[in-house]
Image (tube, rainbow, N blue to C red):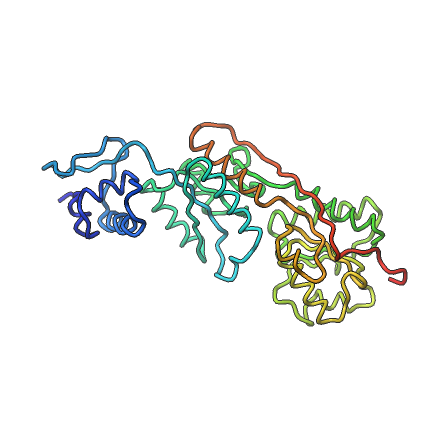
Length: 354
């Protein structure tokens, strides 16, 4: 026997009218009630029609449909990772930008996170099946991403923050020019007089980290400066300690006079390591980082940084996604958000005996 609206209502513990209003995205329905109704629909395998005009719940045929007007929701997809990975200030500022763009267009937002691609894909498939979300913003770009593959296969609107790594001609993305940002950062240190500069990151496979490193190396080559292999530290794990490759470099006879660090989180861990090693910043070692989060403004010393306009990245991504939802078939645009150097207290010219 076919599942009816009354079956859904009975399982959810609500009236058939409440089921109808829930699927019509009635704002009077509480979040808790919406969740119970959609859970009941999923459990029973009820088929919701998005093409007919919804209804008369007293109809003896027990038929059920919803209005053509869909809920105005967009999803924000975080990179799969364990719970310790959600404190990145870059991600927080991007989310603020996306939410601001959504609110201005009267859209709501939902954050999708999890510890694995499989877990997140199952969630996204449910959201898409029941038409609860019209499109998604990815807060990251990764190679061979099953979530991106799913979006592309089923033509679900999505925008990537970061350079697209697949389906480049079909993907809308918002990014910085990270290669130029890496060049500009290295040039700033070189113009200050530094010749012994090391590059530090936690994961070089991330596209933005790879490109910042490429820009750094290009600048060093243009200035005829050597970059020894041990000056490229591209796989550190945190917390840093005195046995880490970075600590060994900082304690070596050929210690660099400056570090270019891929983001604020790694930079703050490096600053703590310097304190433990009795290395003074900036007198003994200059540090330049990326992202300009509030943490580096409050550190001692306050860190010089490349501001990548992370909130603007989020606003552009949110606006582009809403344009895609409301204007199907629009061409895949590529938005580049500018960066700039914020000069603080962590960089000085190298000492004469360095």
